[in-house]
Image (cartoon, rainbow, N blue to C red; front, side, top):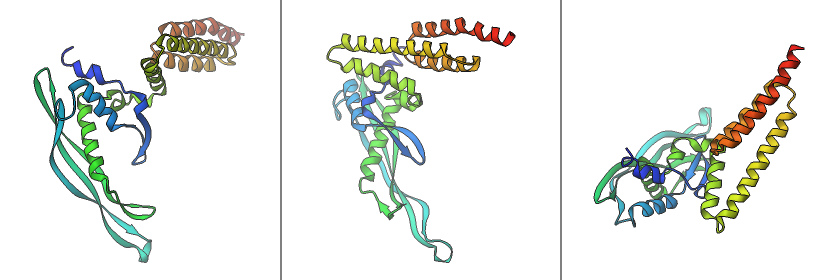
Length: 242
């Protein structure tokens, strides 16, 4: 099993410096930098063209929905949307063996925007990048993004802290800084919990802090918050009984 997960375990965590939030089709997503993924693939397999690469298997334009302008009797057809689609065979070498993955990439080429009908001259390049990123995702590259873990702000914050340590010139100083911030956070949570007016408010404060600390794998912090909950809960029970 460890050999099966050899690549995945090495590449599943995403460097937050090379991500950004984007909106596609009305959905908020985490956009991955294609060049950063190629850089990571180079680290694992070797230079592009030697350790990994791709061949274009198919390329085409697909007709999409019909576009219109105007309303009622003045409504006229502007033609149909066109989407650029590419299919690649992505190959890589690992431990003397060659692997291959087929994947598609797709990008709007002709579509209606607020400016009228618009064409994207870089659609082929974007489709190719899309196909390469999808191929790498099948091997586990940036799996935390594709698994939806970047939807959790606490997980992203944890990754940002880990990246900061990895990139720091003085790692010990960075770790000390983060530990101080951790202690200050726990202290502020405890103080806020002590000022809670209801048991429900107390539990909400506890649960939010535990989620954040769990994402950071801070077992000691989780135990401290749990201990404070256990200490304060009887007070509300006594008030309710009175």
